[in-house]
Picture 1 (cartoon, one colour):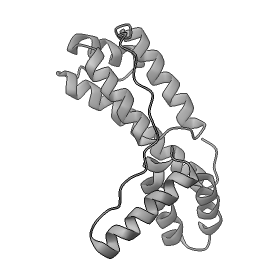
Picture 2: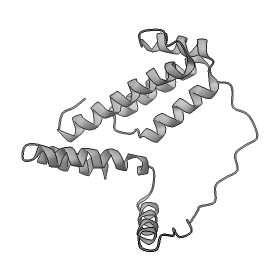
Picture 3: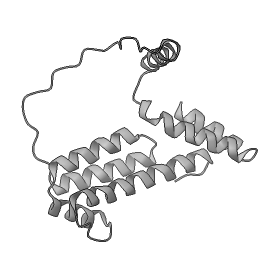
Picture 4: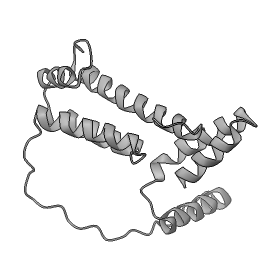
Length: 162
């Protein structure tokens, strides 16, 4: 659906920038739902309609989730974090990343790395400046990822490669 909206926005860009910008904004707003199937999203919309009509959301249908294993994963290293960020950047350029995935990776880095390791992560990624705190370092990485994602969405909406 995102590619369809991007294509429509690209086609409308010459006719109406306001409409094209609206579709780009709509596409960005829909990004958190990109991992859902059409059926799951349809159920979500039905629940939204019910809530709008009655003020009460119906019970969510949940699929049975497998129980997580009790084994702890290996601790995150700076090299792992660098590889994961670079992989996410590559996937952004393929149109396969959502804000949810960025948030998830930032959470893992926050839990897995200490402040000095976050500074090391910035250096390894070529992000300039010492952050001064773990939160600021993670914020700088998030800013790079979000900026790349935004540029990709805009490039797709206006029919350019990038």
